[in-house]
Length: 136
Image (cartoon, rainbow, N blue to C red; front, side, top):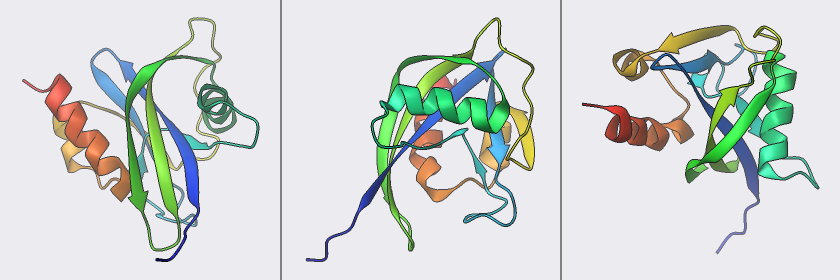
């Protein structure tokens, strides 16, 4: 059996007034123009929570508070395998204004809109759980 490295990735399930904040990847990156939840790779020595706080600062210029794990999933892409941990998170009250520092676009999506956006494949189980938890 072939061995493969698993990349630890974290993401934030950010909600504002019943809508989910989702972001479009830049065209030039892997899985370009697909939508995702903000986050990124965990660096050596970081806890998942620390990584998520750093990624939100680097990608959006915001401060967040990290809550409980919403879910985790392992997905194998042709170029890498990711173990994605999605956390409930909130923008801190004293956070600077959100800015798109890496992403192409942002959407404050309700459940119906989430279904229409082309998401990264690793996010599909997350979307299904969101529908199950927050749907009618």
